[in-house]
Amino acid sequence: MEPIYAALLGFLCGSIPFGLILTRAAGLGDVRDIGSGSIGATNVLRTGNKGLAAATVLLDALKGVVPVVIAPMLFSFSPTMLGGAAAIAAVGAVAGHCFTPWLKFKGGKGFATAAGVLGALNWPLMLLCAGIWAATLAVSRISSVSSMMTVVAAPIAAAIFGHIGLTAALIAIAAIVIVQHRANIGRLMRGEEPKVGSSK
Image 1 (tube, helix red, strand yellow):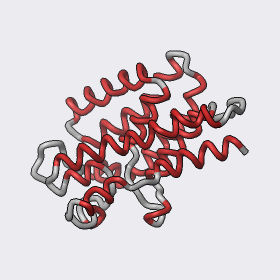
Image 2 (cartoon, one colour):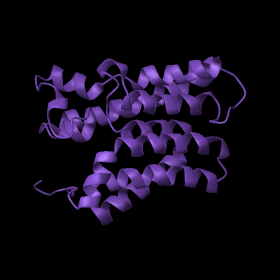
Image 3 (cartoon, one colour):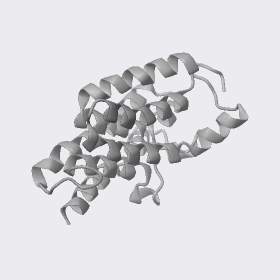
Image 4 (tube, one colour):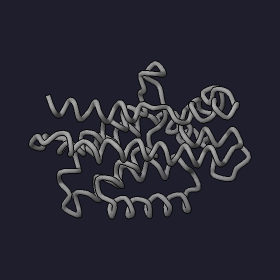
């Protein structure tokens, strides 16, 4: 049962919809009514409030860090196919953000929370992935492309550097994030995905 409890801990922490909470508290209404309808930082930025967007990034990352740090303190089961308590809590946190039960199982796209859990699981690997994200964004100038490239690169990098216990969990996280970007993938295929700094 402990692996289930670790997953639930991550899921409940990840399910807190900070983007929605912050925009409502600031009197900017429901962030789901604009842009992509997501509760993530990119959509919060569409309100024109950069400070709230930055706060959303930090809080969405933090809600991934907290369960990853706490889970090993509470649960000591042997590693499963998805890894130990920290890795399972990490998958749960990203799933909770993307499919929050408080918003009819709809949420954000999971990238900031994925970055948070990766930083808590293995910060050198997170720094490497941050470099991949920055390089991809500089070349493509498309936020969704850099996000998807980074989550796909994470389990590959984990395997290359011998972090086998994290690989399966990072594959699961990548799958969740890619699924949440399905609308972006459709726009990319049609050549309609806006670039960073464009007027669209």
